[in-house]
Image (cartoon, rainbow, N blue to C red; front, top):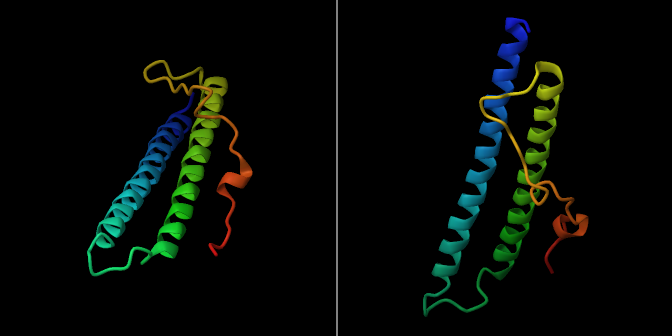
Amino acid sequence: MTDRVLNDAQNLKKLIREAEALADESMIAFARLKQAMLAARQNPGVEVDTGQRALMRLNQAEGQAMAMSTSLLRVHDELSKVAREKMGGDEKIPTEFGPEALASLDDEQFSVTEPT
């Protein structure tokens, strides 16, 4: 294996992990936002339905973020397969995903629809 191939592989490994971490960070940010939104409407001076549409849209964004995270896991899995085929595997840190992580998504679950 040439130095360039090894460098490319190491760069891809770093970048996929970075992308996965960013996907997780976005989901954490959504969770914090939802918590703050729900806490804000606990104020006695705020109507109970205040921000309901915003919460519905946030839930939609969370579903899309989860779908993105699952797609990134699939990308990672495919890159791992390429590494095993072309580079003889990665004995130091194998990447293994359980079937639940790569299960097919229900397309309707993450479809983009406008809240009513």
